[in-house]
Length: 389
Image 1 (cartoon, rainbow, N blue to C red):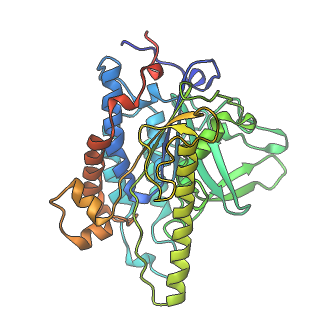
Image 2 (cartoon, rainbow, N blue to C red):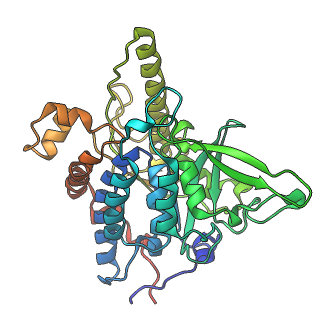
Image 3 (cartoon, rainbow, N blue to C red):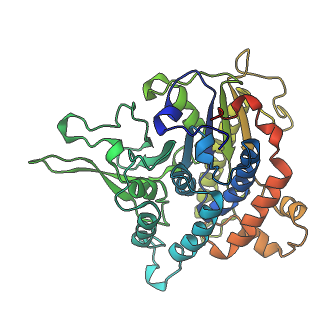
């Protein structure tokens, strides 16, 4: 092996070495598209580090962050899974969990069985693996939202974190939360799955305190890249990595972008849903704009005809990070530029759906095609290469 494998604590340490963050968006079953990009990234970085078949993305990235479906993938990567292992498991998990049933119809019932998802996640991560477990080989950040307080919760395995260990009053440390439960909380998309209850505090003689957690995608952080950057650099989170284009690399991977169609019986309801979807899209664009504004980026994209790709505009005198963003436009023209064989407009329009298992093969192919087009070895400067063994 030509590179040195670090421990979780070495990954998270503020030790003066360059640091690398990988952030994975939410998006339901469209997460399979993400694995197309990750396979190319893994291939590029493996080649950079001697071609070792044992190379994993958890060896390279010091913090892997995920929201919703991105959390499922992020946790598996942090456990040392290869991207191909994740792709195969994702395909089977997606078909098992997103199985439609006439028994789950109705306005006030979740569309899919959360118990089935929980069992699948326990099988993937182990029922007794906790967030502080040594099986997690690098830093992991899962973004969820506590519905009963209305606050986003970034939950991490950072051992220096304020809430990692148990506290007075029976407060349970984040490090003792079951990994499957944290990931399940992040994937609890309203309408699709019931909220996940996590016990926050428990002690003899007291009634346990539980929080109701839902998908992190209903916070501003469906794309967790900005939250991951804040987690790694803000003093309160107790990681404290330095910034700079040669000190901090942030790689962000999406699940496909396109305007989702809305079909409802009520015009008022249709406008309401479109407004909510538009708000989520505005939040996503704002995050990307801010990250591009503070960075040196080989993947800078044009936002609109007024500000373009921001050019030399920087929020500070020097770039605060090196930033890469990979995603696929799921609009018809963009999809057909990637794969001219896709001509069924109804099928293309359905690609934005988050719960369509029949689309997974096509989405994965589009992710692979886009990765071949967009991911380049030069995106990853030699200064971020792993230290030699």
